[in-house]
Image (cartoon, rainbow, N blue to C red):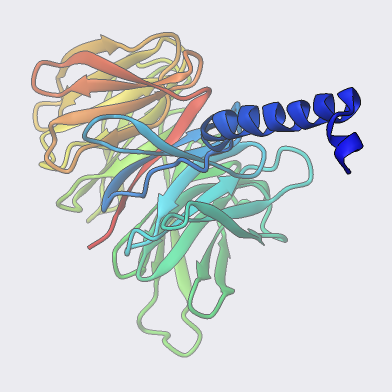
Length: 348
């Protein structure tokens, strides 16, 4: 053994092993950071942002605008929604290839869960969470459907018969579903017929709107539905009591992608994927207040609960733009490659 200890080869091997251990120990923090192991815990209120380029869901602290975690989702993600308890996120996988599914993410552990295959409902896109269920549009099947996380079953579906059933809005009680049909240039209002409780007959009202209408929102008081058409940029306003188109605004928001009311219902924001502008409208007077340029393409819109800020997913510029809604100016950016769908996750 003494001879072995004085052997030059033995000394060289021993030194190499010590050096390797020291290098590995020093690099360990870098490895943890690179693999996402150093991700911070999800706050009670977080901003969720999708990356279409990296196929990830980013969890962002809305206070300091820092990305806390990046979680892999399926290819071609478009929209995201969180459950009412803020613990689970659902991402629509639009169908890039053979995938037609909803990616599911545990926001507490920041890990993906088994995905949900939506077939035969193809091309899931728009998402909503209401009455304890996940509601989604299925563009490829010209339909909408719902998934019950408690029973772990897809429990309802209805066809619209309209081309490119795309975005979706659902009342809190799950009794009314609104959706835009892009290529058909229509809005569908689907209502649960309470007079036929045995088999829950649903009825549909189809209302013509501007060509290419995609993004839309329902006013906070539930009286109006606004949607903007990508073709000529016109805004269509529907009276939800009479279920009729009551006004068309020549907004010239060409390339209109998403539309959202501020929480107080006083303003409406429209994003343009073609120009990168965000159009700000007064909901009462129907007048344009300002156009805010965010870059080369504005997509998803998400507004703070207090109406102080708007977050815009700028897909072409690889960031989420932050707009101060008091000064109507861009005040910051969050780096997200191919940023698109946005949502809040809030734990009560």
